[in-house]
Length: 299
Image (cartoon, rainbow, N blue to C red; front, top):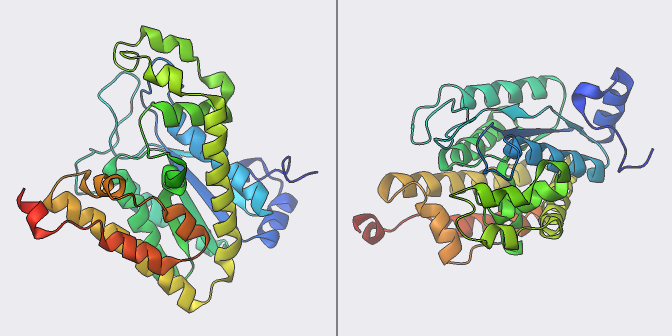
């Protein structure tokens, strides 16, 4: 069986397959998403579907590891039909997602995994903060590397800055699950079809470009993580904590999306490159530029 056909789905593995996959690479991938309206043109499970598909391909390319079934349900969601909102987008308190993810990390550690990769395809601002915060915190608690990130952060430098049912998400799903996008239906959508931009700009080819970048970097970091020594793991943890601090400070002092706005305005698009090449000091420096100044906070 080739790597492109190898079974990496935890729930579909026979015990012998599971043992072989973990022996080859003791890494578990955990894809996250939700069920949410993504326009008339996309499947409602887009977030989890893309995160899971990207993790599957990354595990295959990495040559080992297993992919946990996708977890549906997170923080926030549009006030639209067929959308399940478990916790509010602007809620500082978090009673469901954070403890669930932390307990899953404890379980993965108990199973013997030496690294955990959490990929969220749903990225309201609080969801992004919680997922990265869990990764940084559990890295320290478990003394194994735990990455928690939205998939689009790995392809910033390819022009994918994150959207909701826009050109980026639509293109990714179109490439990963071509039967789950009916682009012509966007013309029936008074919001997403208000202009022809999404229909004209989206394509499976663009989705393939974004997916290739994300998968390649996920596979690279997954192969490396189990072999990190204490110094490398601690450098990674500092970098991820720095991003969390910048995002939280910006939310509290300016607004929910302030840090992400700085990413775009300052052209800080190299997180995926820095992560895959283990340049964690560069991620820290990037994070230091995201935190708002006192002058910005007063505006």
